[in-house]
Amino acid sequence: MSFQERKKKIVSAVNEAGSLSVFQLSEKLSMSPATIRRDLGDISDEGLLIRTHGGAMKVDDPVLTSFTGKSGSNENNKEAIGKLAAAFVQDGDIIFLDCGSTVFKMCRHLKNRNRLKVITNSLPVLAELFDAPGISINLIGGEFDKQRQAVHGERAVQHIDQYHAQKAFIGVDGLSAEKGLTAHSELEATITSAFVRNANEIFLLCDSSKIGKDSYIRFGSLAMIHKLITDKDLDNQINAAFREKGLEVVKG
Image (cartoon, rainbow, N blue to C red; front, side):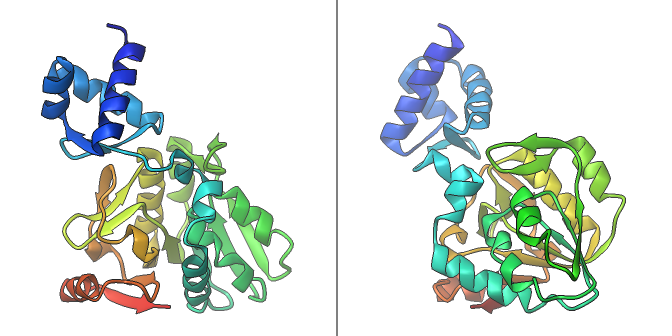
């Protein structure tokens, strides 16, 4: 059976069930676990499924992995988070902004800052801020991802490692007290990790729809974050669990 045939069967089975383990897929489709694991990696890279620990889950809406799709979801909460996060930026700061749609919401609230240096891998951030008189922009170099409208790759990471910022504003695809920070893409996880290790203070911007859920790649613990900025809809029990682990939570 060719990969394309296997892919069709695997995607169909996972979409029908919602989520399946490697061994459930192996039994259901009469394929070896090794083949299933290998195929799931390739299928998740295409954005057709979300790889989980031990299996895969369906993607409710594939367009949500793109910048355009993400920017249109939970719009009001993201606007509130972006405005709140921008209040932590002062004149003269050097900041990292990642390519997340919630981080992008900060931009219009930053345009009146003076002597602000922004280091980013996001073309939407560049387009929004390039004409702000008090802001200079350092656009990270590397391979351009058309879907995410952002720059990724090893050269991008090397670029980031040459700089230091007082503050980094980052997003994630999933966040939980148990698993920490998770992402759909290894490329985005490596960029976010580079921002984190080169900044003094880390602000995680995450709307409540992503909290309490885990995505494909676990790449960081709660300990690496100084402030979680989220919305008013955050579940009180989850909020308490974060605070017990020492994470400062700011709700808009």
